[in-house]
Image (cartoon, rainbow, N blue to C red):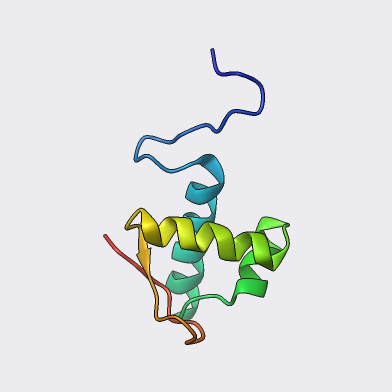
Length: 79
């Protein structure tokens, strides 16, 4: 049993929130042809954009996405 408040990991080693944000990014890129802004991701995830920024950095560190720092809408999903 997981302790209360413990992070739940998905099959690919991402937390539940990381996996949810990755899906938000994937869907947005599929529908629009470019990546979402931090504020658009925050609105979809119902959280503050600074928390989204932290999760995006974790996704990059895990190799799930890549982006160009200081460049808007530059997130790409690494398959």
